[in-house]
Image (tube, rainbow, N blue to C red; front, side, top):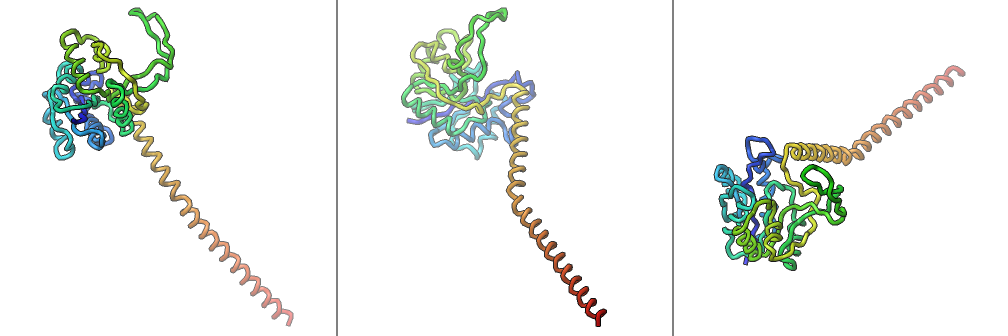
Length: 278
């Protein structure tokens, strides 16, 4: 049986306020979707990839996948909401043991995250990647008044991939499809609402951010510029000893030259003094 990654790329990206959906926006010279696919393509844990896309951008997705991502076996059309797209991806899975559900708008997922999630799901059948909240979180009522402040060490910010034993997550989606998906924002919630399993949280990374608004891209570009500047500084620092050695060598030659000139002058002066005495 296979481990399959479902990469979600059917979102409209309305909050990004761009003509093109965010998953096709360029980061470091490549579409965001490409960045996410590259990580799962290289992972020895993943046997197959299914990309969920909207009908309008299916051809663009095919161009990205062609000749680059051999693990992509299916490109399926998503639905109106995220859970509709996940359900479509789940229905496309064949002979699947574990399924990794990942938002393509999280291009900074890495191999360590995938490996940790994989080790966890072999023990706990429903897992979600996340990180402990850094900030204090307030629960408020509809008027904005604080109802409670949960202990910060009990609050996690949830990320993707979210990883499940396939039969469990498929059953959870089948159950919830007969009920209401209103308010469901991730796959862990589907499992929680179905009542068939608890969800175990797994350490992700604070770098594994979701690109959602223009501010997220601004931060990404600033980080990229800083990285380039740091690389340039590192190269310059690496070359400094050589430059200093050249300068020191030149200085030594100049100093030795000056000393030799002084000796010549002293020698000439001594000879002239002897001549005058004679």
